[in-house]
Image (cartoon, rainbow, N blue to C red; front, side):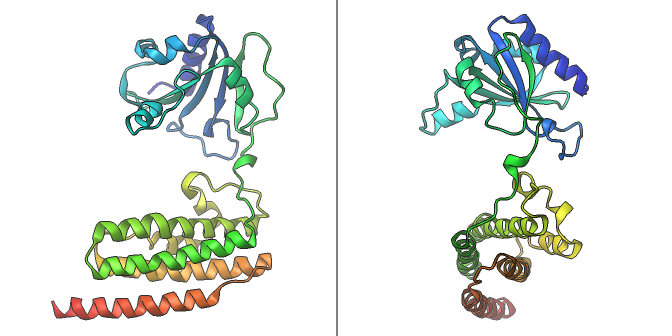
Length: 293
């Protein structure tokens, strides 16, 4: 696997040799002082160019970066599904190479790239041929810190969590496993993760990021709560799903009551109680059928 230095040298060498590339900057975890450093981090690179057409219209120039295992062009997928991205202002390739390195390379017209340069706190300049980049602060994940919810947002999230569980229960009792897993692992889990993030925010004064999809939650949750979170990821066995559902309910109730108290918000306890009664009755029905088989 090529080293970080080899990859950075390659990225900059390509830019220095091409007069159309005027600015290069880096985003993402490699600029984040709080992100753990390892060989799996992507190189999130922006090339700001005077003429994007040759870069967007032909992939052959990418061979210089190495032998590809697979590449994704998000804008092309958008086109396939009926969306209409502007390919000739910005074009991104997500490239995984045979040696395991990954470059997420965006080529953008110069004016657009300059306008976006200061909008992400995780930005680090690599090359500025014309001295046109504005001053920028040292990279920080401050743009990604957990945001304090309003009371309406907090209550809406609680309602979402408790409401969507009725769909999980119905799906189990109808033996609709794909539906169950989507309801639980998408809609219910999104609400649970928001609740966990807000709980961390309360504990840290809303001054940290738990990373994409909460990948750093282990750093901030008490060990028993992180273990509880792990138990909310079931396999396809309905008994295990029911166990995960009630574990999620207990965890969500605890963190949400604490968050409500800390922020001075009203927790909608009757919604919790109503849902728990319904879930228990549905589980009893399922158990009766399951025992009869």
